Amino acid sequence: MVATHDDFGLVINQRTLKSPIAIASMAGIVDAPYVLSRAAHIGMGFIGGYSIDSKTIAASRQMAAEGRSEFLLDNPIEELDRQIKLMNGSDVVLGINLRGSSPTAFHQVADSFGHSVIYEIDAHCHQLPMVEAGAGEYYLEHPDSLGSVVHELKRADVTVSVKIRAGVSASDPLLAKKIWKAGADIIHIDLMDYGNSRLKQIRNACPVMLIANNSINTFDRMMEMFSHGADLVSLARRSDRETLAGLDAAITRYADDYGWYNAPKQLCRGGDVRSLTFCCMPIKKCPLTLQLKTAGLNRDEYIALKTSAVKGTPLENGQFTCFGSMTWCCKATSPCMLRDATLEREGLSKQDYMKLKRHLSEKIVHYVFDELNHDDED
Ligand SMILES: Cc1cc2nc3c(=O)[nH]c(=O)nc-3n(C[C@H](O)[C@H](O)[C@H](O)COP(=O)(O)O)c2cc1C
Image (tube, rainbow, N blue to C red; front, side):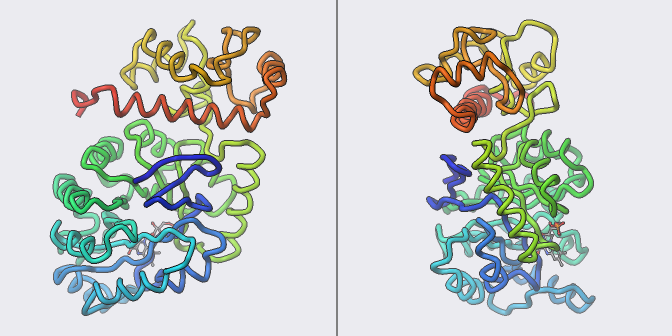
């Protein structure tokens, strides 16, 4: 249900996202009117969190009594129905952030709303009453329970996001891998203070859509996330119209100028698994050796994979480049006369080149995660 295409290349529930900027949920604050009033600048919005069963509703009441802002509901399905209907006709893809203590509770919500929304499991809330109710951060401590909820939602054949907080699980990359293997489509990560290195580790562990979150309020911070593996970035506390509008305008311009809005850094400059699209032939000891090992690819497989992936595309050409084909050429922002001369001869713009490199990277990622067997690393 999650696919990639041109422009921002983000398609969810058969809807194209107009922006890779999202609003992250804030209980008691982010509802449909909040998202609609910022709709011009975002592609996705997560409303909630909504507590959906008796245990979590009781936890919300306790948290509210202690001074937290909460949506206090006797009938969450009725309220969610009202909120979802308010979003009808909007071009923002809607996610509902849910606190539930059993797979059945989540399934009941999915039965009510089907494919109209993304179902986001709140595995993030660390308030004690919620954790004691068996929801929120409880799931980070009990990944098998989290897996059961993901499974149950996938049985209902809906799009599933899991909102996590970095640094709680003993290993975030391993947790991400489990969430992916359980069937989730999206991992929404509050990176706390762990930053882009943690994001890169998660990107290298799973192929699902990643939403990076926490203090992503400036262009530089947003680009740091996009170049280390994020497909989207989300904002909560600073999701005011001015900040969202600035980030949205900047990333739209960047995508037009460079062709691939979330292109990774080159591997030798700290890139992630997607960076293999820019790597040259393995000829010396360099970060490529380690990345191939991590990905479970040997040298010959890597060469065969990239060579077959570009067959019939313009990247196959380039006899005057270092390795005789643009398959092995680097990022358009790295200066190279040989590559640029080839692009000119082929009638390709740098944006076209980066789009082709993006497609190559998607094929590499698909092969590494979906065709190679990773089970022995669990
Ligand atoms: C008042 C408040 C309420 C929040 N409620 C939720 C929630 O219900 N579910 C959830 O997954 N995250 C919740 N969060 C976390 C935010 O979605 C986000 O992860 C966090 O604020 C960091 O992002 P930011 O720096 O953009 O604010 C809440 C945050 C705040 C400040």
